[in-house]
Image 1 (cartoon, rainbow, N blue to C red):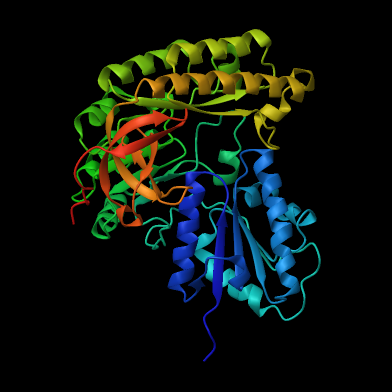
Image 2: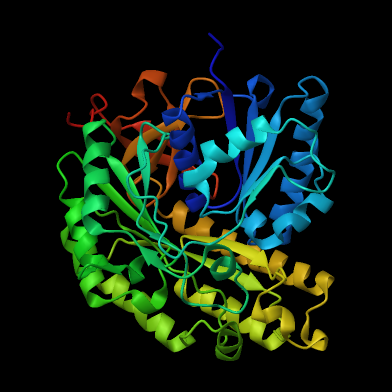
Length: 453
């Protein structure tokens, strides 16, 4: 009897990509593949990719070239590239990565085992520049219902409730590579959460491109969030990434009243100037965003806010950039993900006049200044929280021996001295100091509290 074929999946990009990799791993395991921890052990290597920024794609191309070198020792190795980058570049990706045997976009994973079987059956070496298999069609009905995931973490679970996006921000490639918004059946979502809870996982994060715009079978996102929060065994619920326009009083009432819903909200601003926001097609003004921030903080006083911020969008002037800095100073986000505009072929922003494009060196200087500001604010906020007692869920080992890493309900990371046996436990820490972005803590009293069975 021949041994099982072995597969290795490597992931780049956002939480949705992590969830998709868990999906692919589950599909392969259900069809008899053995999942292995390193590419050197594998018969199939899959690289799951991101297309949001050019830098992410360049990293993937370098990694694919490196993995292609494994074929020298293992000529039968199948190298596949999946996900958003594949959907964006199509078979043109092979011009830069000719060693790839299979291409698959984010709506093709259900057919993954059959596609791999097809590649393995090819008797003649494939023609250079042509994949053994390319599955690139977007399916407006594909939500991957009924398929089992192979979860990476035994502590926290990603639960995709929505795929694709209808918002069409001019800088964003997501609608092109993932298609329009598709919302899963709420009953299927709740059953998945129940399974997660029965497996002993107590924290779930609901995923969607604009997760709080979810609407399916008469269920709004606030209704779904409340139902998930009340699933027996679930102790923490998070969601990402919401759109400011869909932050409603109903949503905030659920956040304030349901004990399991964490006091953290990621609220992407992108820019702090109305003209820039209009060119981005964000569909809200700065004043409307600030009203949402005020509404959130009144409903959930101890909430921690994080955001996304972009500099160098075509046409952004120095004055408009300064407006963004002013909004950041006013809101004082607990955390900010900052980046430069990255032109993505196929997005409306690339069709703006070339004279409007901000020179790279100027965009880099703006980003550096924004990072200094946002990190300085984060440090000030966190220094003010030293001495707090916080419950953390212990997620993984720390970078240093003898240390573990946990996350508070407000999405703050804390490291502390502790044993590996604490993985998955809830523990009350005193936050004793901060490095700026991360806390160092010490157990406040007693023993770690295990999640209820």
